[in-house]
Length: 379
Image 1 (cartoon, one colour):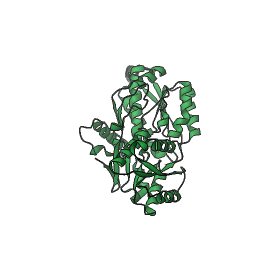
Image 2 (image 1 turned 45 degrees about the horizontal axis):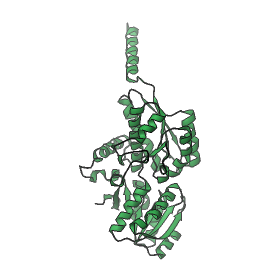
Image 3 (image 1 turned 90 degrees about the vertical axis):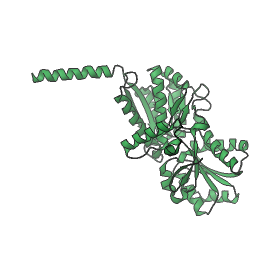
Image 4 (image 1 turned 120 degrees about the horizontal axis):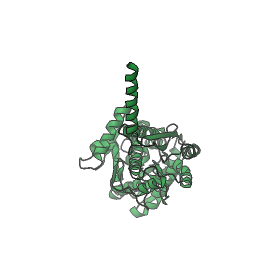
């Protein structure tokens, strides 16, 4: 009798499982810099994506199809990213890919997703990722052009006319440098000094000394940790009193920890997630932001960074596309290109055949000042 009862339970379980998972799994890939110098970007992206996939699978998947997630670590390296994207496409046969984390690694894999016609939703910021438009490539991170505009608008409003710039010599820094130089005339800004530093440089005193000699009104640094923290500390050591601006590439608490008291007073454009609790209740993103922060903190014991939000938005867009397109790569691509009015962590997404980022400067960025070791929304 006991055996019959156990067999009955097994049968019920199998029938229930079959009804819940009526469809073949949707396999999606992800490429993040989980280890290496930019792990502070890739780790929260990986964590966020795993959390969302688990959540949606518990709720029945997408149209009855569970999500099978395949995540690879690029270590922030272009060569490794190419190896892993090839594996995702040829061996794992994924429907779409989220990531990579960095501009350089994204640009390295673009030719492969274009060749094999696999939708890619990058979590990196460089404008070159989507301009000119590439049919199979999208991104969720706010573009550096929008970030530059936010800084330059503040400069124009506050009488800052001469700036010195110091940018990292990688894909992110190069793209930011190009936008800083291209947009300066539009805002009446003169770049009086243009300096570079290497991704592994640990002392920017020589570059900053040359910038100081030009006596700019402000300094703009474009890079990701740890370089920008070194720039902040070196400026303080040199006694430079100019306003220091950072890019959105440092929008994590790790930057404040690395820079220490040299971070005080720095201004940067960043996503609203850093100051979600300071937003007015009327903000259309506030509820989503607070919900994401609460869920991430409950699961991982810490608040998510702005970078985790890039993965959140990428999955949100892909989920929307899969709901409409199913397991057809071409239809997924088309659905992504026609996303409208999707409220995400970093703005409201409106994609089009000519815009594969879909964000505008009104919702994508707010200006933030670092005060007492924390983020303060500037109004």
